[in-house]
Image 1 (cartoon, helix red, strand yellow):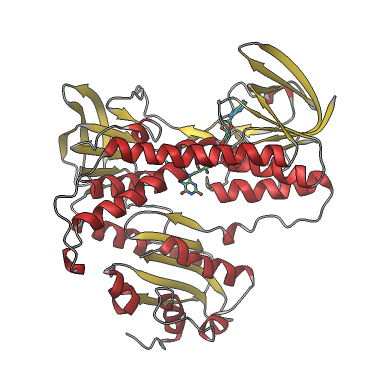
Image 2 (tube, rainbow, N blue to C red):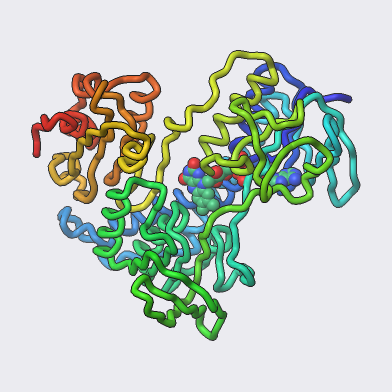
Amino acid sequence: MTYDLIVIGSGPGGYSAAVRAGQYGLKTAIIEKDAKLGGTCLHVGCIPTKALLHTADMWHFATNSGEEGITIEKPTLNFPKVIERKNGIVSKHAKGVEFLMKKNKVEWIKGFGTIKGPGKVEVKTDKGTQVLETKNILIATGSEARMLPGLKPDADSILTNIEILNLQAVPKSLMIIGAGAVGVEFASMFRRFGSEVSIFESLPRLVPVEDEEVSKELERVFKKQGIRVECGAKCDQVQKVSGGVTMKVTLTNGKTEDVKAEKLLVAVGRAPNAASLGLESTKVRSERGFIFVNEYQQTDEPGIYAIGDVVAGTPQLAHVATRQGMVAVAKIAGKPTTPINRNRIPGATYTDPGIGSVGLTEAQAKAKGYKVKVGKFPFMANSKATILGSHDGFVKIVADEKYGEILGVHIIGPEAFELISEAVTAMEAEATVETMMATIHAHPTIYEAVGEAFQNVYGLAINV
Ligand SMILES: Cc1cc2nc3c(=O)[nH]c(=O)nc-3n(C[C@H](O)[C@H](O)[C@H](O)COP(=O)(O)OP(=O)(O)OC[C@H]3O[C@@H](n4cnc5c(N)ncnc54)[C@H](O)[C@@H]3O)c2cc1C
């Protein structure tokens, strides 16, 4: 039997692409090596972290509700129950993905997929090996946590995003190496659960892909919350010792310090899952496992496409993998499609305060030669933020002075990851600063702060 499409990997990229292929009437199979469908995002990424972050919010409220006039006597945190709830959410959605495969007539083939030249995929399971034939292959094998040289994760003290999601108690102290989205989310989560948290980043700032002012604000608030932040720090000599982990840190001022904590989270980036994928049997071009594609997700081998975290130069985000899948499958099915515009990809980081951003940072816009105009509005001056008791952060608009083109929007503050959607839509619709100034924002809402920031590109915000 020949398939129209075989998808390897069932993360948000692979399963969404398989659904779309089913909707287009393509004979489709999806190969997954793990026991459940859903990939990193569903099992050990986006969904479990946000489930725990939600509980961290609830716990923070339960222990800080005095100002609202609510007294909660001796709240207790049943952490195994917290983990159980998180697991329940993951399982429910894994079943949902399974249902979507059935609904769209996608065949789920369990096992490890290896490409055996164009049009051939071998699937290996405990029970044996079979080779399938297909007109097209979509590589959606994702990524896994990078480790520092010489270190091995374990369930006890040296953790990646996988092990930390199954702790049965809140650690008294947690050190984190790496202050990208994964590192800062866990820092924010465990600080709110009550851990002593320290975060070490070798680059000069937290969340280095964000606008510099966002990084500064996050560092200020993290420090206010009691998180130790050390940027420009080098960590080495990690050792498991009785009661936890020690390491040597060379701080930005050149001093070295021995630090110790009950647990260490290593969050230093994600490596592509390309080992044993059989790329050498094709013309697919890759570097250190990252696969090169064109704007339609086509590799150098006709009939082989790649999407998601395994693709070179792609922001490693679930919604990027999904959208790339839509582009690839449309191309395979001969349907019209629009390639991704790199400048319109939202980023969302679920710290407290949250971060949402899209487009160029101020520094990137200036480096590209734009005459930049910036509009900022602080949540301090937003009445809904006062009602929520969440005053940290701001909205920052980066615009081109000449035509009022919106080049980037950067938000740090309450629900920033939700607020950014307005900016993404505005940019996709090619709205200008003027359009957004004339857009009515309901009152009282936190997204009024976005409207006010647009007004402030021309110094016309009302409430500051
Ligand atoms: C802690 C954490 C939090 C995150 N939070 C967010 C967030 O809030 N928002 C966001 O957008 N992104 C988030 N991400 C990133 C997001 O998880 C990834 O960008 C996304 O999962 C990538 O999707 P993918 O489809 O490319 O691959 P993956 O989700 O990695 O899935 C790949 C699948 O392929 C399977 N596979 C690999 N090789 C083979 C093979 N040879 N044969 C068969 N199967 C194979 C794997 O088992 C896996 O199931 C987070 C990541 C982490 C680690």
